Length: 158
Image (tube, rainbow, N blue to C red):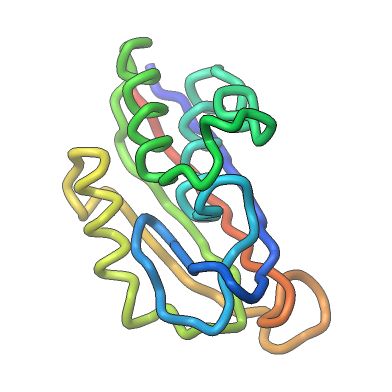
């Protein structure tokens, strides 16, 4: 049996925060606002995994009202989610993601992001796809001054 999950997350860009995507700190003038480290990529993957396994969403497992998750490393949260789905008998077949951001240019960071995610999940890098897209400077969706959004799709097998 196979199951597909879709995840989505968006975090606002603000001054005074680190920009972390897929566990990798990206040098940029702004970072993502959130209760944890606000790693929007990792959060979207968590939601996709949880959804595919019928286990709710990241907010149910790691609520932003719980001080235990204040400034939490999202890779740690991803590993907890991975453990949960493995307990249910699921194995990750592949992960496909799209990061939507006008800035920074993420092309040089994509291989290292894939590597970080693969290492965190004990997977081969070739089953993880990290794509980055812009909105072509148009006024809808996240832009360089507002936010970064991510879509993630996962395929699980049992």
